[in-house]
Structure formats: C-alpha cells, structure tokens
Length: 569
Image 1 (cartoon, rainbow, N blue to C red):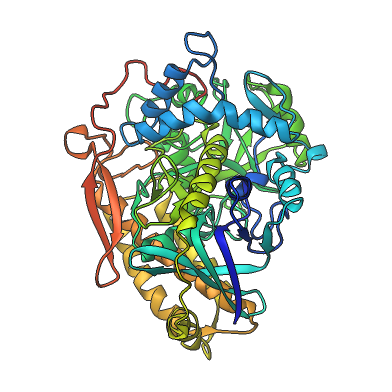
Image 2: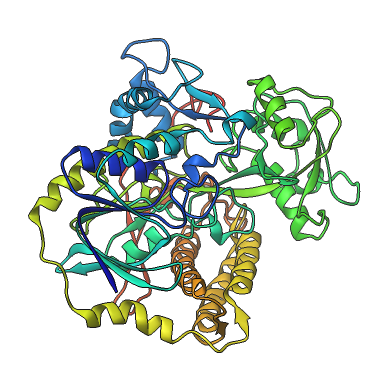
C-alpha cells in the first residue's frame, strides 16, 4: 500500500478543488490534490463539472456597489434567499455576496477574460473547446507550485478518529491501494449526476463526497432539492434555455402528436406555461411552468418518446430574446440548425441544491473536514443562476485557507493496517464471481432513478425506489462479476450512489409538500405551515438514514413579486 503524507488533502478535479488547492498552498500548507482520472481532462472522468458546461453561455453572478444600479449586494442577497424559498442559508449566501467580486478579480488576475465587466459571462463555443477555462488556468498555476497531484486516485473512504479527520484511503485505477495521511481534508467531489441516465455531469460525479462525509459523521441537508432542466439528448447534450421566449413553440412526441394539453390543469393554457418558462430554465413548481416539464418527461414514461427518450421541439418560427445570437451559434456548434432542425429534448439532471452542511469556511461538523463546490450545501429549493461557479471559487478559497490553518495541529497518522483492510480489502473481497457486470448494474440504476426520482414524485414511486436500492445493495454484494481491476473502483462508486440515493429518497418521502425543484404529485402545493424547515440527514447506529427537521432560514417570508432579476436561473 502506497503511503502519502501531507498537510491538506483536496479531493476532486473541478474549479472548487483547484481553488482550494491554490488557497491552501498560498497559506503555506503542503498540499496534495487527489483526482479521479487525468487532471484537467475536460468532460472526462475526474475533470469536474466546472470545465464541462453544456449551455450556450456561463455566468458567475457578480455584485455591484451598495446603492448602485447594477446588482447591488442587498438585492442579490434577497434574490438568493427568495429563490431558495426559505431553504437557503442566509449567512452563507451573505458570504457569497460579500466575496464573489473578489473571486472574479482573482480569476482575472490568473488570466480569465470575461465577456462583460458587469456580468462575468462568457460564451461556450467550439473555439473554447466547451470549457470556461477556470480549471485549465488554475491547473497551470498549480503545476508551477510544489503541490503533489495524484491522478487515477479513487478515494473510497475518509480516516476519522476521535471526531477528527486524519486522511483518506483509496485505490488507483489499476486496483492498487493507497493511504493519504493529512491534517485536513477538503471534499470537492461535485454532485451525484451519474445516478441518473440523463445528466450533464462527467463520468466521475458519483456522490462520493456526500457518502464519505455521511459515513464520517457529517450532516447532509436539502438533498431532496435537485436542479433539472431541458436539454438535447441527440446528437449531443446541450442545454436548451427558452429564456425570453414566451410565445408557444411547437412540441410533439414521436407519434407526431401534440401532448402538452394532456398535462395541464383546468384553466391553464400553453401560453400560460410558456410565459413562465421564459423566465427560468430549471424545473420548478413555483409557477405553472412545472406542467411543461411534467409533459416532456411524462411522454417518455408513457412510451411516446423517440429512441433517445426525447420529444421534438420546433423553434423555427421563434427567436430567443435573451442573447439570441449566442444561442444560435452554440446550437450550430452542436450540429443543430434551429431554423431547419427539430430538437430532441428531455429533462436532464443538472446539480444538487443541497449537500454537506458547512459553515462560512466550508467546514462541517467533523473537525478538519471541509466541503466546497457542489459538495457543500447552502442553496435552497431553487438556485439563483451564476451562484454555483462563483460559490466554488469563494468557498474553495476560504476552505483552503482554513484547512491550512487547522492542519497545523498535525495529528499523528493512523498506522492501524487493520483499519485499512476493513475499509478496502474486506469490501473488495466480497465482490466477484457473479453474473452481472458493474456497468450493467449502473445502467439499470440510472434508468430507474431518472424515471422515478426526477421531475415529479409520489409515495408509490418513492416506495418502489426504497425497495430497489435495498435489492441493489444485495446485487452489489453477491452478484457482481469483476472483469478488470478498475471494476473495483466502480463498485465503490456504486455503493456511494446507493448511500446518497437513500438520503434523497428518505428526504423526498418525508417532505409531503411541493417546493421549488421538489414536486410531489400527491402533495402538489407548498405548505409553509408544516414544511418551512430544512431536513438534515445523518447516519444512524444501524447505518440507516436519520432525518431531523431544523430550519436555518428562520424569519424568511415570501417576497411579493418573487425573484427580482429575470431570468433567474
């Protein structure tokens, strides 16, 4: 077993990971970055979602001066909290608002060139290789330092003793085990996109950070709130934002039939849902646009979609009002002429709005353990656009600095080899000799979760998913065929996805209301009287999920007119 020693271990390969790594190094800490796959390989395993945008533009929401006309801080903070519908963390949103401008300046100093001074926006185009450049630029800076980068490193568990993190353990792609002794650990592993068949996330985003933190004693919260939205399924994934496009567009299923009317409540028209869809891309039940998304997803579940799970969208007679040329150019780069071609679209998973419960430095309740980027939760039922990338930089920088300071405590390394065997060798030994490949199990899991956990849920679907996950654990333990050393890494990832799925299903089952991105068909209305509270998940003594109601946004009241800036996300 190869052994590494460092002050700060950063796990991940996206923008939050690179920001934390640079910050910890700048603070004087020996820093090690552990990356799945190859560091900086855009869109590939371990690259992180930061370097793999699927929309025609990407934005870091900026903040202007107090009292200014453009994005004054008090208004951005109000919008962030209001978008979360009472579920966002006001204190941490406040830190974002205070420091995101400094994060943008820091990126500019490294070489980023934004399209606009007021909105930190850049187009995603073929010349840029579909990358926003954050990871590439910060990777170049990291390579000029003494930071140790370990590639093809699949972290499988954290080492915790006495309520304090002491490092981590894992296996390389070739099956070789390793241990990293560290004074502090920063989780920057992204979200759980690979749990779903249709997702924008790269192959390595399997919820590892959530699962490892939960097992280590951390809290997860807001996990029932999953951001989803429209995107092309063929010929290549590409977000379709219908911003400022209120007129009815043509949609029809694989049979050539119009279908949206089948899903509309009495008194609601296509014009109504189109008008609301024009102000936000994500699936949300805060307005009638939810019924448009229900219809698109529902046609696939009813067997009336194309072989690519899609329905057809015709935009030939319409024009997007928000940055139209950028949209046309981007779709053309993806092989689609919007004047002549029919889009094949469907609902894709995008991000988790919840995550590991953190403080203003990204520190969780396990001493020495930090979480940043999509792994660290502070957003609410919906999320204001442009806050994910910016938050990765703000809290990545804060966590790296705080981790470097805490690592000075220099805890003794854990030398108990039996602990390592328990965390690695024993689970690996229980796998093998079965009839199913891990790849086939994952494919089936993704299909089921995409069908039953996205867009709209009900008690029957959630009950089915609970049973499916329990049965999947048995299949994983008893019926997996190991065909290559790399399969062991995939088995650990699959276990993590099941651990996180348990949390999402439990929280979605408990929240018997609809709020933001969480839509319960059997409880279609928001219920502030009973559910103006967050749900916190921990691991119980038996290994199961324990949920507790705790409200972090005490005092929130719904704002007249909802979100100020349109489109909001």
